[in-house]
Length: 231
Image 1: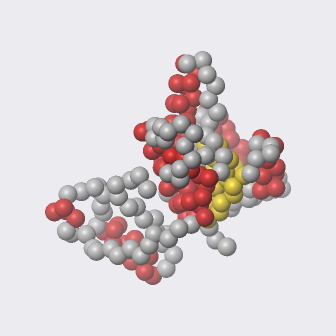
Image 2: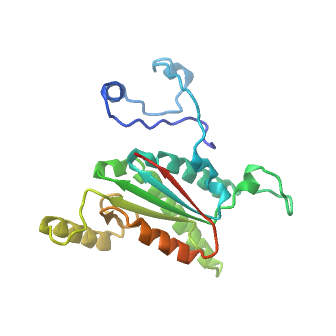
Image 3: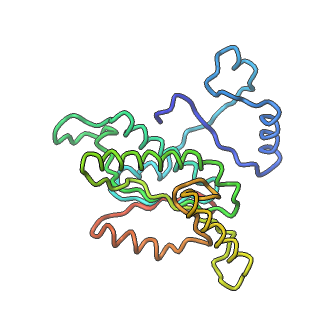
């Protein structure tokens, strides 16, 4: 909501979306914020919406989990952008003990867990650059807090799962693949698949284990869980 433009993510999944992809492949747009004259050459786009989603309630919780499957991670990036905007501009209500319903007062989030799953490695390229930027911001805030003699608890915990790779130890090819990825991660301090600081995990996430871990970290607290992806 803080951007001065609308960005749309379209997954190629049929004839119409394939035509859209081919059009922009042949007519690349290098700058979304181009001048009015250059905009004349672009096709008209009519947008129906926006429609509210459950994800918009995430800021009403102190602790929340966002689960995105494939292109279902799109709403997550919008939420992360909003969080970044708040940090960059230090927005907040200045009224002591304010009980209004403005955006500043409704923002209660203290910890956000982002879980992104995909069968396709290529899918991680969609938002990896932005997620990497989020992690760099967190590292920068931690370093600043350390300089002040404070301890900074990261607000955002990003976990990425490549579900097409099995966790079974009986598949030698996949075991060697995981070992190679792990060694590259240690030497580069970045995940070779996503370029994120957090390592890609293989197989489907064990949500029972993940939710138990989060519950133990934040006892006696309501935890919001939000999902976007295939049913």
